Amino acid sequence: MKIDLCLYENENAGMLEPLALTRPVFSLLCGTKNLIDKISATVGIAPGACFVRKYLQETVRSSHFDLAVNSSDWLEGRENILFIDGSWIPPLDFRFASDVSHAGICSGKPVYYYCKRNKLTSITEVQDNFDLVESLRSLDLPEKTVEGVVLEYLWDLVGNNGAQIIADMKGFSEFPCPMEFPAGLFGPLDQLFIHPEAEVEPLVAFDTTKGPVVIESGAKIQAFTRLEGPCFIGKDTQIFGAKIRACTSIGTNCRVGGEIENSIILGYTNKYHDGFLGHSYLGEWVNWGAATNASDLRNDYGLVRVQVDGQLINTGLNKVGVFFGDHSRTSIGVLLNTGSNIGAFANLLPGGLLPRNVPAFASSKNGKLIQGNSWEILMQIASVVMQRRQRELSPDLERLYQSVFQLTAAQRKKIPFDSEIPFNRKSA
Image 1 (cartoon, rainbow, N blue to C red):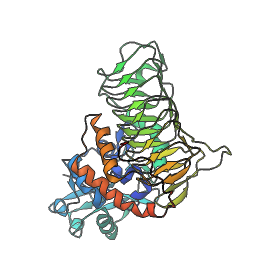
Image 2: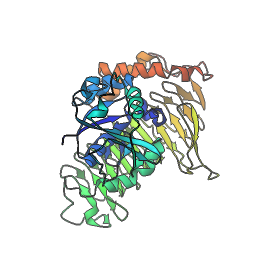
Image 3: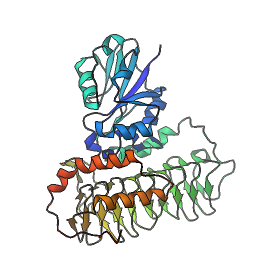
């Protein structure tokens, strides 16, 4: 029996901002894989379609050429479709009853809908994720309780990252463990995975006592680095004498130094210099200036609250760091408060502890919010940054950033900005 897989975003995608502001939720990294790859590998079906927020559809089409995006036409003629919420991580032993239409419920929330042909006929005129979710819920399907992880906030991805690295490596055979016991290894050899095309200098320490250390192709690990499992170093990433603590994932083509603990860096990000990052999530094309440090624990050990999508959320956790949207930047010596939410294209200048919530495309200096650079300058900077990694600021991507700029305009209007402009056109 042929079963097609379709991923969708639920109506709470905004709770995963600022990272989900510029990408669908299933493109977020957790463990060693993006959620789309994790779901596909667990279910054993390659996705054929997805339904996302409408402003994201063009960039999703250009980055996922094999997916039909927000397409009602794709739904027509299908016999059986498994619709999975892109913010749900299925358990490794996930199985579903394919003989009857039903909904899967995890932690009290619908996380997938399995629809046979007789149910699909009522799903018509679906233009985005909101239409699809409404249509699926209106089917009133019988429910089945399932296991897995429901990701509501970014700190959920961070908190589950270590367990997901371990889960991703169960039965892993894409590249072998080293044949010889490295001089710097403390722990089981069968938990050390180094791609043959990775480069590891002498005097690197590996601690695999609590989980696997995974190093992908093209990665370069400099001497005097300590890698503590479970941790994941992505393709073409360079680690410069850093302390990488447990439960950390660093994505593709990053430059990383200093100390990182239980954090995720999505990709193409610079954190080259010393400075602490803990219990945090950084997006793509982020640049951390030298001696930028992020607090992940209040000095009274209280529970951390984070402002997300206009709401102040009590995380229920006493260790929460910072969340950085794409193309955000810090200058030398910036100090970041516990539970900071920094929007895309934000620019943070030093001066005491910064505001804990900086809207997208805004700036901060001397602890106060100020107007950011002009749109033209921001795009010039983004283009230069991406060219340094042999990537292009494509028209689709620039249109996406324009949409995000417009979507977040209301947030900036609510802030009593100082009038100072941090840079002029010549300095850019």
